Length: 355
Ligand SMILES: Cc1ncc(COP(=O)(O)O)c(C=O)c1O
Image: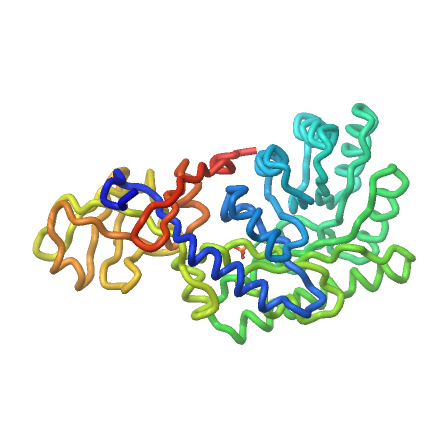
């Protein structure tokens, strides 16, 4: 199918770039003790997860049960849910997944959470698997003291839940644009994780999994010998914001195709507004940077930059989202491009899974 026959706005995914990003990450990790457990919050399609597993990923990380259900439906695993499953409604959904044979490990961070999981397990006669989330400085969820982590590991074992290890996500470091500051903050986060690993080992509870890291810290997070895997997700598509933080490491695979509606002396308008594009990480831009979507309203983007001088109504331009994950979550289909052809359409099965 020719790109010209697509209606706009719509997402285009360059499969050659996706595959090259997957291959670059795999080449970087080759021979290192740390493997990849890529985060599904970015691609949200089994088509990409399968390619990541084929390139050596040891499993897939998810944020929500809805994403885990999409992977389980596609027969993909093992799945690591890097968030807590809280409340009986969600816990019973997790147990239903386990009853289907899905290989899911969830994060826990409190004794309350362990008790709820144990109660759900007793209700459904399932044996959940868990890792303990450690707060490595982001101050979201997670244990703070190694002694707390040790107690939680013991509680998991007492409750008959399979204790597998720990995770610590340094989300406060991943997007820092200054490489030195990013390395400093990520290293400090890893030192916190190290203390928890040591505390567990001293208590005879050495973790099998130590999962950390995002795209912005993939190089630093793989340095310590105790890290078993990293949870980078954005690397596979990249986006405008991350390509400034990590120039040259990966390429942008995702664009939004949009049609120019009007061209004025100092601005133009296209048919991509905040219902199809997000801008919380800055203005989406064309690949050459000559046009930016300076302002979004519901169905329109206000375009500025030197590139608008050559635009005409009806022209089509591709914008690189500044934040890929939230943009693609607004859509239902990837139009998969190879060269100038659209070769496939992939449903974004994990989009808008709110829980
Ligand atoms: C728990 C967790 N792990 C890993 C990531 C990695 O994400 P990215 O690759 O976008 O840095 C995130 C991002 O939100 C996360 O929440």
